[in-house]
Image (cartoon, rainbow, N blue to C red; front, top):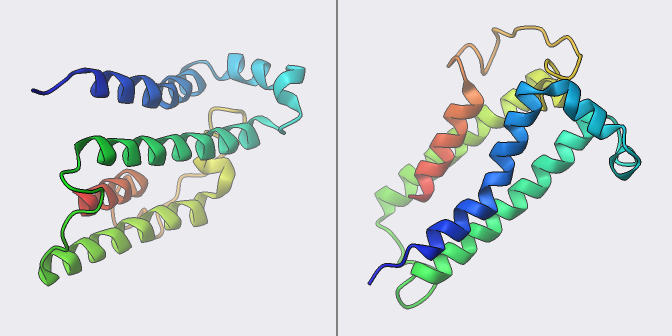
Length: 150
C-alpha cells in the first residue's frame, strides 16, 4: 500500500529552494535588506548569499534523492545495470546537459546565474554558446541531466 507521507516529506524538504528563489525574483529589495542583517552579512554580498543557498539546496536535493531511493528500492539502492545502449544514451544526455549548464555559468558568471539582474547588476543578454543552441540552456541542461537518471 502506497503512502503519501514520503511525498509530503520530500515536498517540505525541497520547497524552501523554490520559495527562496521566488522571494529573490519577486522581492529583490527585501532579499537585499535581509542580506544586510548581521546574521547573513558575514557570508558576503547578495550574490554570494544566493550562491551559498544554491549549494545548500543542491546538498538537500541529493540527500532527498538518496532517501527516496532507499525508501523505494527493491532489494537495494542500486538498480540492476541497464543495457549498454541505455547506459550510453543516459551518458550522452548527462554530458550534453552538463555542457549546457557549465556553459551558462561560463557565459554569465556567478552574477548572471545567481539573480544578478534582480539584485542590482547589469547582466547583458547573451547570444553565443550555449544560448545559440537553445533559448534556456540551463533549464534544458537540467532536464537532460534528470532524464538520464530516470
